[in-house]
Image 1 (cartoon, helix red, strand yellow):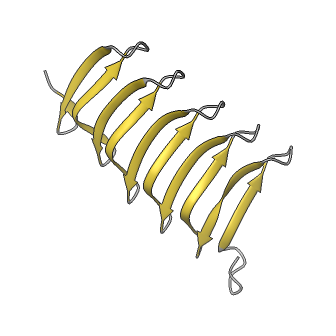
Image 2 (tube, rainbow, N blue to C red):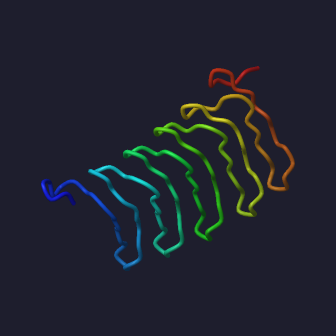
Length: 131
């Protein structure tokens, strides 16, 4: 907390579940999330790893299942989803992949079956599916 305003968080931060396990950890700068934050399931397994700059998601975001396997990987700039997003099946094989601009799909999005075979391709132009 800042000395001149105790309601504004500043510095390392941890929040805990009732069972004592860490729920959330990261750091605040002048009341805004800054740097890498880790969110955990109640069992202590990492749920999300999110990078922040000036309170906005900025950088890589990885979401994990309760066994610690990656379910989704994405990248944000100034709170907008950009670049490729990859989602995964429990087995670790790719479920879907596609490019996003300002949080909306753009270009080719591919979805796969659990065995890795291509299920469908959707082409987005100006963030709407095309025929």
